Length: 582
Ligand SMILES: [Zn+2]
Image (cartoon, rainbow, N blue to C red; front, side, top):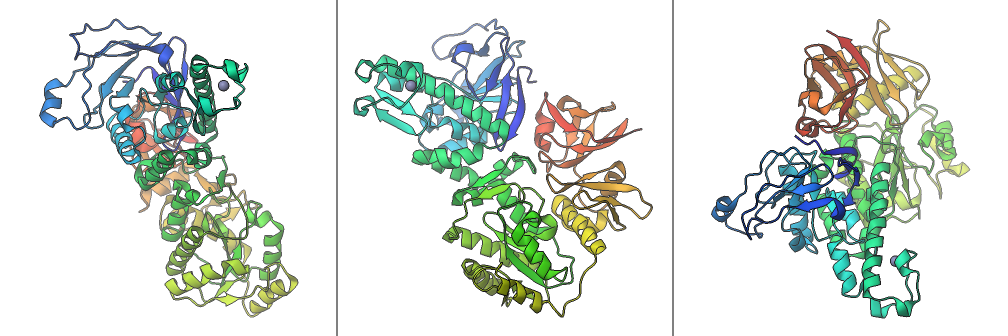
């Protein structure tokens, strides 16, 4: 039971939370001032501390170094008592188990600093062994340069020990690394400790400066997490230290750890400035869903066009020109780094509408490989009578690679640039023999394509076998033949919000339903974690969920992952959009 820690924001594995002490502490944070360590049992037998709500008490413990033999660990393991005050247990990655405490202290944290592989393994093992709604504390490791990446990995609590020690050693810390005080001609900082002549600034001041910069770094991290943009920040900031870059790249390789913790929708924009962006969960998940779940329902030629800076693409001038040339005679798919390929029905779907990339006209080798692979997989999964590449010259290599991989011949219609008069007229004339599709077909295909993307392969046909679509794009409403509304398209995220009737269809269909089973109560507006009896493991933050209990059938949007709903004893598990009492 976690009473004194609560998570409010989730940004990948990073969490913005609150240590609920007498004076609450927003996390990730430094906890030096609110920590009471009851001490190690190695040195002497310890009495159980009294504890109180003003501090986080580290219960008496016996820490063991990494690599301690199993039988030694067992012989010396500590049974932590149930206590009524904010408490933390000391664990190692090998021995971590739930102890009923609010926080867990990683005993060998300092050994891990600087070692990316060991660090990532230790954090993931520990994080997965202890309940999701508890805080993880890494003592003695925080520096202004590393806290963003450590928080990104899922660490919540830190202290000033390392920063202060470094200061007394004459090491001047910043968010981009450290310098020897002696080497500094000026103090590149505006903190109070640095407001004095350089020659009077001593090691004591240096320790104070380090602590100030460290505190400020936590402010940045907490704001970034709240905005859902910590990843954008570390892609730039972590570059200053090799081992930190290695940490977040290794985390990318631990896809399931990050994927389970990454929302399926959010408002925050993704800034794509480096090849590392291609390995983000949001990008990989989009590519995977487009190539594995989505199916093109238009019986028309494919026209590949470049993305536009303006989102959604259909609002841009260039896409307006493509549209005028195509005139509903082809299926439009945009090509882009970092997203890959975006079918016209999914132009609103997160993150196709929420990214911004640095456009130079030159693709990196990694971008070319990624987009070509996604396009090849897309062409394998969808059969078109013709494939027309209406693209600038720099896309040619991608088309040739993808065409070769998928065994598809491309027709090229752009001369110099796709928006030149000649190019547009080529595009129009190459489609002159093709017939048009109707608005109704476009709307139906949009609803079904989004359902495939959102709920799984074939979901569009299963959930919307009979369909009539009302209202104007993008605010489409999906109804059944009797006019009962099943879902509406949410333009901000390009995803469907189901009604009760839509949720019932989902439950009755072959498409796997994401379910939250609740206790015997009627949830009004939301479901809190303690009310959750069970939840599908596949639920991610932002997913549509069916909520059902003895007294209610409801549909809403998940605010936690499925595993987190089950493990947590505090916090909002899901919103409730529509409800039917039983
Ligand atoms: Zn300073």
